[in-house]
Length: 126
Image (cartoon, rainbow, N blue to C red):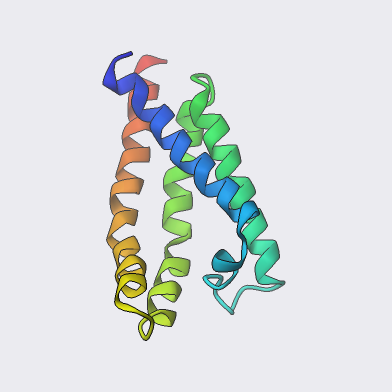
């Protein structure tokens, strides 16, 4: 399988793993939900996990890949405030946890670009 065909499946796998983690161990995700959002943090955790699973499924299927890739890029932008919250909240934690929280911030840009690249590639094949 050429690299360009594996790329959407790799991103789908990453999103599926993250989505499942939201259900398997929701507590750490609850802590990243911005307080300004209405409702319970757990509801937002489950909702974002479900979105990640849906995006993973959409990326895995060639027919839905262009739309799912665009939606994934938007999702990565949309969850950035949660990553900022985590970095702020974890600034007094141990060095490894602080580092993990801070490392998430610059990782959002490559994820957005990866998803956009998949969308462009999928549209080029359509």
